[in-house]
Structures are given as C-alpha cells and as structure tokens.
Image (cartoon, rainbow, N blue to C red; front, side, top):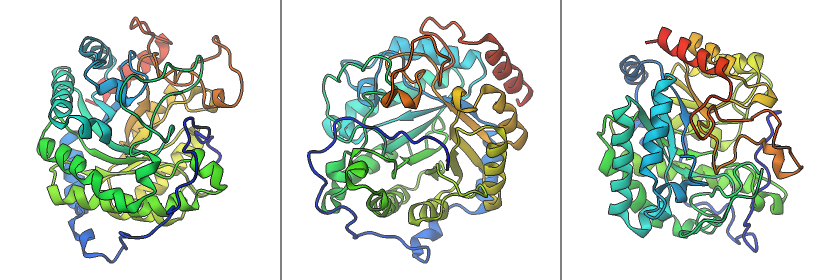
Amino acid sequence: MSQPVKDIKANSPDSLPSDVGSSAHFLTAKDERLNTRWSLEKAAQWQRDVGWRVGCNFTPSTAANQLEMWQSDTYDRATISRELGWAASIGLNTVRVYLHDLLFEDDSMAFLDRVDDFLSIAAGYGIDAIPVLFDGVWNTKPKLGVQPAPIPMRHNSVWVQGPGAAIFYDSSRWGELQPYVHGVLSRFATDPRILAWDVFNEPDQVDTVTLRAGSRQAKIATATELVSLVFEWCREIGPTQPLTVGVWEYEEDGHPTAHSLNSIILELSDVISFHCYEPRPRLEQIIAALQTHKRPLLCTEWLARSVGSGVDLLQVFADAHVGAINWGLVDGKTQTRFPWRSWTEDVTDDEPWFHELLHSDGSYYDASEIEIFQRITKSMR
C-alpha cells in the first residue's frame, strides 16, 4: 500500500526483546472459538438498529495522549463536554476513543468511573463510543504520570502504545492484560452507550522495535497471537456490542494484505473495520473489496488532506452506507493537524491541516467542510 505509515517512534526499548515472535496462543481458522463470532444475520440486524455512523477519533485538545486524557490529574471534563457538543453540532454521532491497560492497572475503579462519566457526557449529546482497548502505534514505553510535553509541530509526538513493547513481545506476561480486558468489558458489556469494541488498533504498525529489527514479520506474528487471545478474553465476557479490529494495508486489488494477522482479524471480527487515508478511487476500490465479506463496514480512520483524503469523501461513505470515523476533531496537544512527515522533515505552521476539523475555540478550519458534514448527516437521518 502506498499510504505513508506512521514510521518514526520515540522512546524505543534499549534492545529488542529476546522472545519476539514466540508462539503460545495462535488461534487458527478451524478453532472452535470462532463459533462465537456473530452470524451475518446478527451483524446485519445490528447495522439496521444503529443506522449510519459518522464521527471522529476523539482526544480532548488539552490531552497529548490517552494517558493524559484519562488520568485523574488531567481528566478535563469541561473540555470534553464542550468539544463533544461541538461534534454533535456538526452532525457527529460516534466517537472512537482510546483506553489503556496501565490506567486500569493503576486504579481500576477510578478509571472505569471516568470512562462511565465520559460515556454519560457523550450520550447527553446523542453520541455513542467505540472504545479501543489496545494500540500498536507510536511510543513503545508507556508510563503513567506527568506526560512529556509535545515536540513542537510534530504529529502525535507523545502518543503511546498499549501494551508497551515489554509486555507485547513477552507472551509469558500476556496474562497480566486479562484483568484489564475482563474488567472493562464486564463493566460496559451491555451498555447502550457503547457502539462497538475496537480490540486493537494497528497491532502490527511500524515502530522503533521493527525498525531496529529491520522487519515487521516478528511483530505481525506476535500480534496475530495476542489479538487472537484478546478476542477470546472478550468473548468470555459476552458483550452485546460487536467486536472488531481494523485492517489498514491493502493489495493492489483493494483486498487486505495477505498475512496471518489480517486473516485472523477478518475471521474474528463481528463487523469489519478498516483505515483508509487514500483518495476517492482507491477508497472506493477498498470498500468494494471489503463488501465481499458481507458484514457491516466501519472506516475508523480517514481524513488526511494533503494525501488526497478530504472531507468530500464523506459522500462516498454515505452512498455505500459505510461508517465514517475521521481522525481528529479539535486542534490541540496531539498536534495531528501536522502531517506524518513531520517526524522526518521540518514542516511549517501555515501549511494546510492534515487532520482535525476545528480550532481550539470551536471555530471551523474550513466552513465548507462543516457544511458537507451537516448536509450529509442530516440527509442520512
């Protein structure tokens, strides 16, 4: 795929863990646990029930990463409420929001209470949530406490992976993550404010570990096993909401890149989610390829103006009845209005925004884009 990957990460481990790619829990397509996946009929009924979903990946502008969003000292309820109100005003009905295992490990009840509070705020504006349990992108050494200051004009400069590389690559420690998965899903397994569960964001993405190793193959193999296990843990709780993991790399014909992780994602997900930062022809090709699975589709990341993924593509998603969750809402500490290439080259403060829709005061980056959101979302109600 020609899409630029988020390829430069900070805070790398001092050395590549010795057990990269170790096998303990690989789940094959023939495993009986696949029988717990939703049927096509159940998935189709879910789509009829929830309607067309349009929204954004949400981090309040005052948080630089998912830890800063949720920790007690920096949980900014006022900003969250204000910005979710702005989201609703432009027609959004869904937010994708990142959680983290360290937050649960530190103080499970307080963390879950804050998640509950967030869901209540969102529901007050008619917005449902897609929580993301784990993330394979960016900094490999997450740490609780005061987070580093963002590096000026660098895209997502202090975002963190969860779990960190120390656990991700050590299968003997995977059991440490089970209480987090069980705890979060047990609390919200039947909660109507949850639209779906995103089990693991881009679990095989490039980072400093893969760059040091010179290959992503070990990460793909390890992610295949861990993602399979997390799906199993989720199924043990039996949530009423669907489970999904997004695919993000594609063959020339638009089908997901052929490897073990994508195979297991497509075999286990109740609804198919995907990321696409491509221009219209490629987006339409990828949608057509994914529609062959005959399951509801959610694009959980899109909108990157300078590489051809603009707000005009919202009409493509609406016409195909594919959920559209763009990256970002308000310009803030994540600094994702700057492009991916800001990791490898200097960028200027006045170049066109990459992601995000609103300035920090709620004013529109581009009023014509907001008109598109409001017009299309109104027509799809």
